[in-house]
Structure formats: structure tokens, C-alpha cells
Image (cartoon, rainbow, N blue to C red; front, side, top):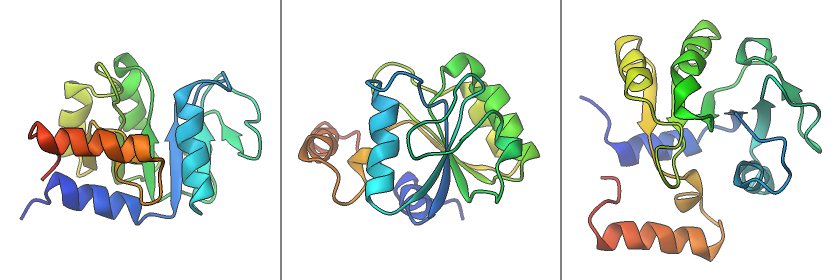
Length: 156
């Protein structure tokens, strides 16, 4: 039986070692806030960005295949145009669970990448911001989740 999106979200958030792929080099970028919130809540986060250097207290890897020790899951925050390549890298690295981040617009979601995940046994969450579901996150993120419930778009 296939898992619901809500079940996948709960399972993803139960992972304690997660790769954040595509974290911006700009300290003001929202991707940095996402990583910071996960760290604040006790997650072991490693960042992956082929162009980034050290990111504060977080080690930065150029490719997911270089991460050691390995991670349980990957949060993909890249442009959708490179997401298919990223999930192929995740498969090569043995990662079986990815979340394609989306706040507004398309985010990291790519239909080709989602299809690749389905065909290769990778569990995938396609869309949403994890901060809406992370207990203890700022009220604005919980409010965003509430709005999704009101309009019938909250994951089931």
C-alpha cells in the first residue's frame, strides 16, 4: 500500500541526518533559514552545493556522493531544472527518500524527477515547505499550513 503524503512527511521528519541540497551561498536566502530551523530542532544537517564553501557551523559537500557518513534523506532546494540530476545523484549515493522543496512557484519540483524517483524506488515528497510541518517552527509557517487546510490543499 502506498504511503500518503502526510505519512511520508512524518517519516521524513523522523529522519535525524538529512542532506540539504542547493542551500544558497547568500546568508539572507530562505534556504539558509530552513537549514537553521532544522539545526535548532536537533537535526544533523549537511549541506550540498557544488559552488559553496563553509556555511557557518555546517559542513558543505560539493556532491551528495561525497557525504560521509551517509544521510537518511535529502531535502532538495535546487531550481527544478537541475532536480532530475540531483535525484539521480541521490540514487547513486543510496538515498531512498527525497523532499522536493516548494514554497512559491515550482520550487525544486520536476515531474521528470518525480517519475525517476517512482521508477527507482525512491520515496518522494513533491512540494510544500517542511517548516509548515516541523513542530516548533515559527508561527508564520504553521499559519501557512492552516491556510492550506482552509483551501483544501493540505496533504492527506
